[in-house]
Length: 345
Image: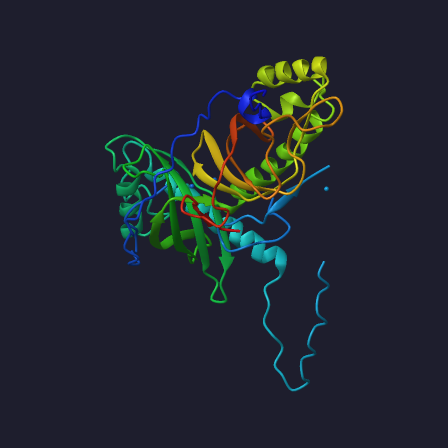
């Protein structure tokens, strides 16, 4: 009997992803006119499941109409609205002030006075304390989202990266308020910490979309095997091992098929890389097949699960695969123990 030769496992030697540690410590949710701890920056799947779970995607060789507006009775007062362009400009200005405050707080010699135009004294001092928690200068990567409130203030939701950090996760979930001052500038006036361990929705959706594209292309690359596909550099950081395996398959006449329902979750997020785990359900022929299209021994059976661990790094324009290990084994599709909280819009 020939040994199992899964393309994922055969091509990629070991996953570079570190184990995801679950932090069960809950930060106090006391509103600070400045907060206790923090630092934050994938396309959403067609169907959104509960907050941190991506919709399952079936990989195979595979609008709601708006309800009519309810008329406003003639006697009703006209509803006050903010023009979309004005709302967008105000939210953008508030997010910029929030981001500038974090960046200023992270500098070596930052003082509350330095941040006076960007944040109230308590907020400024809290940001400085957070970004200097290790005693070293931190790098911060804010990725805020904003909601313009009826009173003109802007609510910020943020998953900010702060590295180095004293926490198991370098990403921190914060909410806060940014208020326009009489001179037209914006100032952060409140900040509230939440549990650490998050990923910005934008990054989450981008990476999961890229992962699903990667699965589809792997199926295309292996059936029939094409070691000369020009798209490899767009998918893999180092396509050499994958190309070598496809060359071998082409010589022997083998093909690789992938028919799974994927359930990916982002488990680590840093400025350097994002890692996904996926407990996939096998829904069709999956594995290696010989020249007569007969499955080679130990192919995954329909109804079984395949566990994948894939790490992406950012290229100049997109996310590319740095490492991937996929193993046919039992896993829990419903499990979300390793998921990060998805924050923002």
